[in-house]
Image (cartoon, one colour):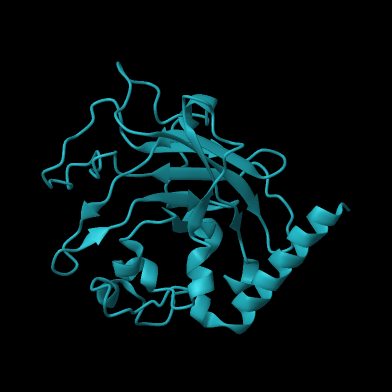
Length: 240
Protein backbone atom coordinates (compact mmCIF):
# COMPACT_ATOMS: atom_id res chain seq x y z
CA UNK A 1 0.00 0.00 0.00
CA UNK A 2 1.35 3.43 -0.98
CA UNK A 3 2.19 5.87 1.78
CA UNK A 4 -0.54 8.31 0.72
CA UNK A 5 -3.14 5.54 0.77
CA UNK A 6 -1.96 4.45 4.23
CA UNK A 7 -2.35 8.03 5.44
CA UNK A 8 -5.88 8.24 4.06
CA UNK A 9 -6.83 4.88 5.62
CA UNK A 10 -5.41 5.94 8.99
CA UNK A 11 -7.31 9.24 8.83
CA UNK A 12 -10.58 7.47 8.03
CA UNK A 13 -10.03 5.00 10.89
CA UNK A 14 -9.47 7.96 13.21
CA UNK A 15 -12.69 9.60 12.02
CA UNK A 16 -14.62 6.36 12.57
CA UNK A 17 -13.26 6.15 16.12
CA UNK A 18 -14.46 9.70 16.73
CA UNK A 19 -17.97 8.74 15.63
CA UNK A 20 -17.90 5.81 18.03
CA UNK A 21 -16.67 7.83 21.01
CA UNK A 22 -18.04 11.33 20.48
CA UNK A 23 -21.66 11.94 19.57
CA UNK A 24 -21.08 15.70 19.31
CA UNK A 25 -19.89 15.25 15.74
CA UNK A 26 -23.37 14.08 14.73
CA UNK A 27 -26.13 16.67 14.17
CA UNK A 28 -28.26 17.20 17.26
CA UNK A 29 -31.70 15.70 16.59
CA UNK A 30 -33.45 18.35 18.64
CA UNK A 31 -31.62 21.64 18.10
CA UNK A 32 -33.84 24.57 19.24
CA UNK A 33 -32.33 27.18 16.86
CA UNK A 34 -33.42 24.88 14.00
CA UNK A 35 -37.12 25.28 14.78
CA UNK A 36 -38.59 22.39 12.79
CA UNK A 37 -36.22 19.87 14.40
CA UNK A 38 -38.54 19.91 17.42
CA UNK A 39 -41.22 18.33 15.23
CA UNK A 40 -38.99 16.14 13.05
CA UNK A 41 -36.78 14.28 15.51
CA UNK A 42 -37.93 10.84 16.82
CA UNK A 43 -39.62 11.00 20.23
CA UNK A 44 -40.78 7.40 20.49
CA UNK A 45 -38.94 4.06 20.28
CA UNK A 46 -38.29 2.85 16.75
CA UNK A 47 -40.74 0.32 15.31
CA UNK A 48 -39.10 -2.90 14.18
CA UNK A 49 -40.23 -4.09 10.75
CA UNK A 50 -39.33 -6.90 8.40
CA UNK A 51 -36.90 -5.25 5.93
CA UNK A 52 -37.88 -7.56 3.08
CA UNK A 53 -41.56 -6.77 3.53
CA UNK A 54 -40.80 -3.03 3.77
CA UNK A 55 -38.77 -2.97 0.57
CA UNK A 56 -41.60 -4.54 -1.42
CA UNK A 57 -43.57 -1.30 -1.05
CA UNK A 58 -40.75 1.24 -0.76
CA UNK A 59 -39.97 3.70 -3.57
CA UNK A 60 -37.90 2.45 -6.47
CA UNK A 61 -34.71 4.07 -7.73
CA UNK A 62 -36.44 5.26 -10.88
CA UNK A 63 -38.31 4.00 -13.91
CA UNK A 64 -35.17 3.62 -16.01
CA UNK A 65 -31.52 2.74 -15.59
CA UNK A 66 -29.05 5.39 -14.47
CA UNK A 67 -27.50 7.02 -17.56
CA UNK A 68 -24.23 9.01 -17.66
CA UNK A 69 -26.11 12.13 -18.80
CA UNK A 70 -28.06 12.07 -15.54
CA UNK A 71 -24.94 13.43 -13.80
CA UNK A 72 -24.87 16.55 -16.00
CA UNK A 73 -27.37 19.00 -14.51
CA UNK A 74 -26.53 21.57 -17.21
CA UNK A 75 -27.76 19.33 -20.07
CA UNK A 76 -31.16 18.27 -21.35
CA UNK A 77 -32.68 21.72 -21.89
CA UNK A 78 -33.07 24.11 -24.80
CA UNK A 79 -30.42 26.49 -23.54
CA UNK A 80 -27.59 26.89 -21.09
CA UNK A 81 -28.43 27.42 -17.42
CA UNK A 82 -27.49 30.71 -15.79
CA UNK A 83 -24.69 30.75 -13.23
CA UNK A 84 -21.20 29.48 -12.48
CA UNK A 85 -20.56 25.98 -13.81
CA UNK A 86 -18.98 23.72 -11.21
CA UNK A 87 -17.67 20.17 -11.18
CA UNK A 88 -18.36 18.32 -7.94
CA UNK A 89 -16.58 15.03 -7.43
CA UNK A 90 -15.23 12.81 -4.69
CA UNK A 91 -15.09 9.25 -3.44
CA UNK A 92 -17.61 7.25 -1.45
CA UNK A 93 -15.71 5.19 1.14
CA UNK A 94 -16.50 2.94 4.07
CA UNK A 95 -15.03 3.43 7.54
CA UNK A 96 -11.94 1.38 6.62
CA UNK A 97 -11.18 3.55 3.57
CA UNK A 98 -12.42 0.99 1.06
CA UNK A 99 -14.19 2.36 -2.03
CA UNK A 100 -17.90 1.63 -2.44
CA UNK A 101 -18.63 0.88 -6.09
CA UNK A 102 -21.98 0.86 -7.88
CA UNK A 103 -23.74 2.98 -5.25
CA UNK A 104 -26.53 5.34 -6.26
CA UNK A 105 -25.77 9.00 -5.48
CA UNK A 106 -28.48 11.60 -6.07
CA UNK A 107 -28.26 15.36 -5.66
CA UNK A 108 -30.73 18.23 -5.70
CA UNK A 109 -30.22 21.95 -5.27
CA UNK A 110 -31.45 25.49 -5.85
CA UNK A 111 -30.48 27.38 -8.99
CA UNK A 112 -27.98 30.25 -9.12
CA UNK A 113 -30.67 32.63 -7.82
CA UNK A 114 -31.40 30.45 -4.83
CA UNK A 115 -34.71 29.02 -6.02
CA UNK A 116 -35.74 25.38 -6.31
CA UNK A 117 -37.60 24.11 -9.34
CA UNK A 118 -40.52 23.07 -7.14
CA UNK A 119 -44.05 24.40 -6.71
CA UNK A 120 -43.60 24.86 -2.96
CA UNK A 121 -40.75 27.33 -3.48
CA UNK A 122 -42.50 30.62 -4.16
CA UNK A 123 -40.03 33.23 -2.91
CA UNK A 124 -39.38 36.08 -5.39
CA UNK A 125 -36.29 34.80 -7.18
CA UNK A 126 -36.28 33.86 -10.87
CA UNK A 127 -36.79 30.31 -12.07
CA UNK A 128 -34.23 29.15 -14.61
CA UNK A 129 -36.09 27.26 -17.38
CA UNK A 130 -32.82 25.53 -18.31
CA UNK A 131 -32.06 24.17 -14.86
CA UNK A 132 -34.13 21.72 -12.81
CA UNK A 133 -31.46 21.08 -10.16
CA UNK A 134 -31.59 17.28 -9.87
CA UNK A 135 -29.07 14.62 -10.90
CA UNK A 136 -27.81 11.14 -10.13
CA UNK A 137 -24.96 8.77 -10.86
CA UNK A 138 -23.47 5.44 -9.82
CA UNK A 139 -20.08 5.36 -8.13
CA UNK A 140 -17.22 3.89 -10.16
CA UNK A 141 -14.96 1.00 -9.16
CA UNK A 142 -12.79 3.31 -7.03
CA UNK A 143 -15.85 4.85 -5.34
CA UNK A 144 -15.76 8.05 -7.42
CA UNK A 145 -18.88 10.08 -8.19
CA UNK A 146 -18.93 13.16 -10.44
CA UNK A 147 -21.49 15.86 -11.28
CA UNK A 148 -21.46 18.89 -13.56
CA UNK A 149 -23.84 21.52 -12.25
CA UNK A 150 -24.34 25.20 -11.38
CA UNK A 151 -23.22 26.73 -8.11
CA UNK A 152 -26.41 27.27 -6.09
CA UNK A 153 -27.37 30.57 -4.51
CA UNK A 154 -28.54 31.24 -0.94
CA UNK A 155 -32.26 31.53 -0.19
CA UNK A 156 -34.60 32.67 2.61
CA UNK A 157 -36.28 29.99 4.71
CA UNK A 158 -38.23 31.72 7.52
CA UNK A 159 -36.68 29.75 10.38
CA UNK A 160 -36.08 33.05 12.19
CA UNK A 161 -36.01 36.74 11.28
CA UNK A 162 -33.94 37.40 8.15
CA UNK A 163 -32.97 33.72 7.90
CA UNK A 164 -30.97 32.66 4.82
CA UNK A 165 -29.59 29.23 4.00
CA UNK A 166 -25.98 29.19 2.81
CA UNK A 167 -25.32 27.79 -0.66
CA UNK A 168 -25.47 23.99 -0.49
CA UNK A 169 -26.14 20.81 -2.44
CA UNK A 170 -28.22 17.97 -1.01
CA UNK A 171 -26.78 14.47 -1.37
CA UNK A 172 -28.73 11.21 -1.09
CA UNK A 173 -26.87 7.89 -0.78
CA UNK A 174 -28.85 4.68 -1.07
CA UNK A 175 -26.37 1.93 -0.19
CA UNK A 176 -27.67 -1.49 -1.19
CA UNK A 177 -31.27 -0.99 -0.03
CA UNK A 178 -33.76 1.84 0.44
CA UNK A 179 -33.66 1.37 4.22
CA UNK A 180 -29.95 2.31 4.16
CA UNK A 181 -30.57 5.75 2.65
CA UNK A 182 -28.49 8.63 4.01
CA UNK A 183 -29.19 12.30 3.22
CA UNK A 184 -26.63 15.03 3.87
CA UNK A 185 -25.56 18.46 2.58
CA UNK A 186 -22.37 19.84 1.05
CA UNK A 187 -21.36 23.48 1.58
CA UNK A 188 -18.80 25.90 0.10
CA UNK A 189 -15.84 27.50 1.86
CA UNK A 190 -15.93 31.18 2.80
CA UNK A 191 -19.73 31.47 2.91
CA UNK A 192 -20.59 34.13 5.55
CA UNK A 193 -23.99 32.50 6.14
CA UNK A 194 -22.45 29.32 7.60
CA UNK A 195 -21.94 30.94 11.00
CA UNK A 196 -25.61 31.97 11.05
CA UNK A 197 -27.16 28.71 9.80
CA UNK A 198 -28.72 26.53 12.54
CA UNK A 199 -28.76 23.40 10.35
CA UNK A 200 -25.01 23.61 9.77
CA UNK A 201 -24.45 24.65 13.40
CA UNK A 202 -26.50 21.69 14.73
CA UNK A 203 -23.22 19.76 14.49
CA UNK A 204 -21.63 21.23 17.60
CA UNK A 205 -18.10 19.95 16.95
CA UNK A 206 -16.30 22.52 14.71
CA UNK A 207 -13.95 19.96 13.15
CA UNK A 208 -16.88 17.72 12.20
CA UNK A 209 -18.75 20.69 10.72
CA UNK A 210 -15.75 21.48 8.55
CA UNK A 211 -16.07 18.07 6.87
CA UNK A 212 -19.30 19.25 5.25
CA UNK A 213 -17.40 21.90 3.26
CA UNK A 214 -16.09 21.00 -0.19
CA UNK A 215 -12.51 21.88 -1.09
CA UNK A 216 -11.77 23.93 -4.17
CA UNK A 217 -9.54 21.85 -6.50
CA UNK A 218 -7.64 23.82 -9.13
CA UNK A 219 -6.45 20.64 -10.87
CA UNK A 220 -10.07 19.60 -11.28
CA UNK A 221 -11.05 23.02 -12.64
CA UNK A 222 -11.45 23.14 -16.43
CA UNK A 223 -9.99 26.27 -18.11
CA UNK A 224 -12.60 28.78 -19.24
CA UNK A 225 -15.41 26.33 -18.46
CA UNK A 226 -16.00 25.20 -14.86
CA UNK A 227 -14.47 25.45 -11.38
CA UNK A 228 -13.86 22.22 -9.50
CA UNK A 229 -14.77 21.08 -5.99
CA UNK A 230 -13.81 17.85 -4.26
CA UNK A 231 -15.82 16.29 -1.42
CA UNK A 232 -15.24 12.75 -0.18
CA UNK A 233 -18.00 10.97 1.75
CA UNK A 234 -17.05 8.44 4.45
CA UNK A 235 -19.79 6.15 5.75
CA UNK A 236 -19.15 5.18 9.35
CA UNK A 237 -21.09 1.91 9.23
CA UNK A 238 -22.40 0.96 12.63
CA UNK A 239 -21.18 4.23 14.07
CA UNK A 240 -23.34 6.41 11.81
